[in-house]
Amino acid sequence: MIWLLLGVTATMISMWWLALSSRGGRDLIELLLLFTPLLLWPCLSTWKTEVETPRDMPLRFNRARQRLYAYNFVHKAWNPFERWRVVPVVYDWSQVRAERWISSRMWNRAGVMLSIVRPGSNEVIDRFLLTDMGEDAHTWAYVCAYMQEGPKALPRPGPARDHNDVPWYNAALLLAPKVKWPADMDLESRTAP
Image (cartoon, rainbow, N blue to C red):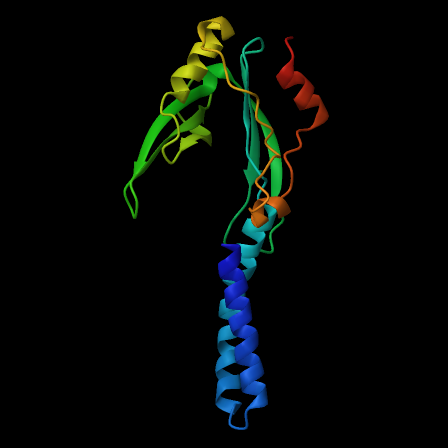
C-alpha cells in the first residue's frame, strides 16, 4: 500500500511540474486543480492506515479470571482526519462466541471471528478477528481447551511471539505504533485474582 501511495504522489508532483513548466499548461492546471483533492483523499487515508494502525491487535485469554483482554483499535478508514485510538477492553469468557466466516469476493478467504454478546442475550456488541487467511482453523478449539481445562490439556506451545517484532523490510509496520497495553490491564491479564 505504501508503494502505491508513493507512486500516486510522485505522479501528481510530476504532472504539476509538467503543467507549470509548459506554455500551454493552463488546461492541465485546471484539470489538476479539480483532481488533486480527489487523489489526495485516498492518499491521506492510505498513509494514515499504514502508519497509525498498531503493529498487531493481540488477544489475551486469562483462565484464572475467565476473561478475554482485547487490544481494540477504533478507526474509520475513510476519514483520515479523525483521531484513531486504541481502546483496550475486557470481557467475561461467558460472553464470547465464535463465528466461522467465508468471503468469496475476489479470493476465497475464511477465518474465525470472536463475537462478544450482551449478557443474557445473543446481541453482538463487539467482534475480534481470531484467525484469517489460512491460519490454523483449530485455534478456537485450542483456546476453548485452554480456558476450560488449562494448559495441561494442550500440546506444548512454541516460543512466545513479541507483537512488536516486525520484519526489517516491512516499512509500514516499522512506522506503525507499537503494542502497549495499559499497565493495570497488562498486570491483570497476566496474573490470577
